[in-house]
Amino acid sequence: MATISSNLQMTLPESFDKVDVDILSDNFQKIDDFAGEAITKEKVANNLTTTEEGKALDARQGKVLYDNIQFVLDMMNE
Figure (spheres, rainbow, N blue to C red):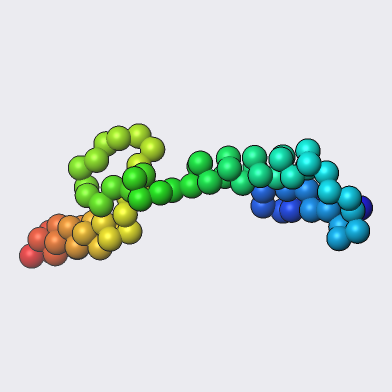
């Protein structure tokens, strides 16, 4: 009896099950859909000025933001 994967909900047949092309096609479609939603280099912004919807902020900008916040806090404490 086939089971369902926990992440992509793919059908996982048993080793003794006959090949079902419809199940294979469905599984490949789930992989393709997932890959299309993944964050790619083109969807990452390595700056603090991008306003385009759907962009992710590059992790390197976390350091820039931290340094800027720390600078402001230090100026307030002087």
